[in-house]
Length: 263
Image (cartoon, rainbow, N blue to C red; front, side, top):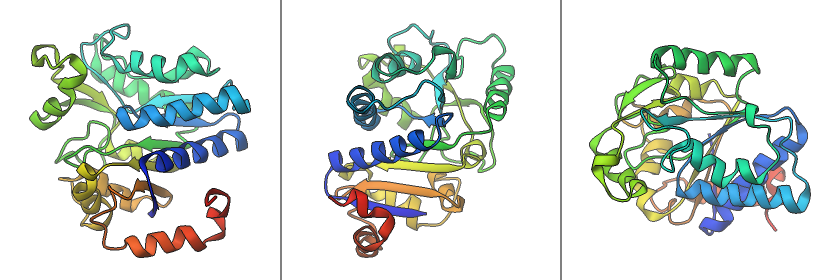
């Protein structure tokens, strides 16, 4: 695991987008795993800007989102289908048939989960999985005590996740779905590369537990410590509780691979 600290939220977002863009340019048939949430909106804004201003080409890419709510139609303004359409897919030249999300309306959710994993295998697996982290340390909707070898499946959402996400449903808990389809922890770890973006002081404690604490199913993001190619990009606020932050800063300032991003 490699932790990179940037001075501000915007600088962290920009670096994450630059790394994604570099990968897409290097491999036109890139398979990108996507996440949702407020922090990711900045990444998608920057990728859309690069598509418009720098001709960043998504025409041969495939994307796979981490999750989708159960019982929420794709056309609903509350769905992750609509989130992705609004923030990225309508703004770049990705083919609609190559932009994949789980179908939370499928009549057989277990079959849908198996099909989703099959689609990922068909294109050679996810090249880079973009991730955030929940306040209890979850990645995707892999809530605490999710098995670290779990696969794409239906999951019940915890009360803390419901409370964190209800703002996206107008604050109305009656509209908030109780279940979701999510890639499993094991599925995420099969991505060739992982990129976790974390910003803000509200994530400082859980970030430290995830990247420097023990590997535990109570903090599913801690499983990323097992991944051979995982980069964690954070701002100074999120880095506040990291014991190794001086070393992480030194790496960014001195390793040749980061020289193009230091300006």
